[in-house]
Amino acid sequence: MLDSRSQNTIADEHGGGDQTVLIDIEDLSVEFPVGSGALFSRNRAVVHAVDDVSLTIYKGECLGLVGESGSGKTTLGRAILRLQKATRGRVRYEGEAMDEMGGRDLRNLRRKMQIIFQDPYSSLDPRMSAGAIIGEGMSIHKLAPDRATYSRRVAELLEMVGLNAEMARRFPHEFSGGQRQRIGIARALAVEPDFIVCDEPVSALDVSIQAQILSLLTNLQFELGLTYLFVAHDLSVVRHISDRVAVMYLGRIVEVAPSADLYRNPLHPYTYALISGIPVPDPRIEAQRERVVLGGEPANPADPPTGCHFHPRCPFATEQCVVEKPELREIDSSRLVSCHRAEELTLEGV
Ligand code: SF4
Image (cartoon, rainbow, N blue to C red; front, side, top):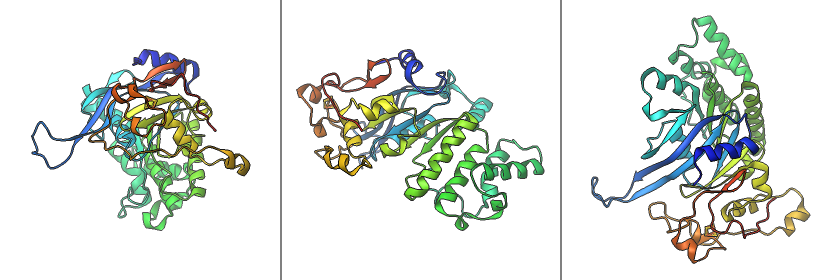
């Protein structure tokens, strides 16, 4: 497996952003006990939601994190923010181990790291006005010295996300889904973060609104110098917003690559299957494309397959895949892949 320094070199040459490491994730695992076995039994089943993940996020980049529902991507995003306790491993923010921080350092870091939630309908408190929702973090972190500064800043934030300052007095039920997501974005921006986990921020919205929100997020990233971890189940959503994309399957990262390379030339059969499901706008090309339909049942995360977790569904699996776990390894200077056969397969992108 590559250490962080090796990953550093890879993205220095080909990744997005200014190539300074912001977040370094090292061997991170998150496990959940499941089932009805005795609470303290040693044999109690465990779901490995995040399984020994190492990943680097560079300052100013948008790293897409993609996988099917249940792949662990949301849990990984929450573990980075410490909204979910990790079972093992470590996250460093600007070189500082987050699990060793406490008191004022941790409070300050919590301000710098924010999240935009998936569901704009349930993530806003219906009893609070839009202005109070946006301003709450500013009050907690004492970012506005007086009432006038507070109101001015709330108005600025509303306009920054494409809403009107007068909307501060309205309540969530008076807004559409897209407008509510804009309020969620303004709430995250209010505390002047450096890093935002965008947790499927458009998947609950109509397609026409999705494009507007993605464009807003891209513009804000550029204007404010933000770093994003953009979590999505749909590869087409992260295609244009991400500098690099990491693909997750059953708790493990299976491929990391610059966005354009990943779509054009996927190296992992699971990435290939996801890409083959993206529709192409040209009907002639679309009619000739080969679709990969994954065989087998999605695996049970409490009882994952041996060797390569993907082997029961992989059309290219061999005996080696059944018994031996493929490490995430460097294929060229910009790409990581976890597949025994990556060099010999020729997989077609879009
Ligand atoms: Fe398929 Fe084997 Fe590669 Fe896993 S290691 S993706 S089973 S070819």
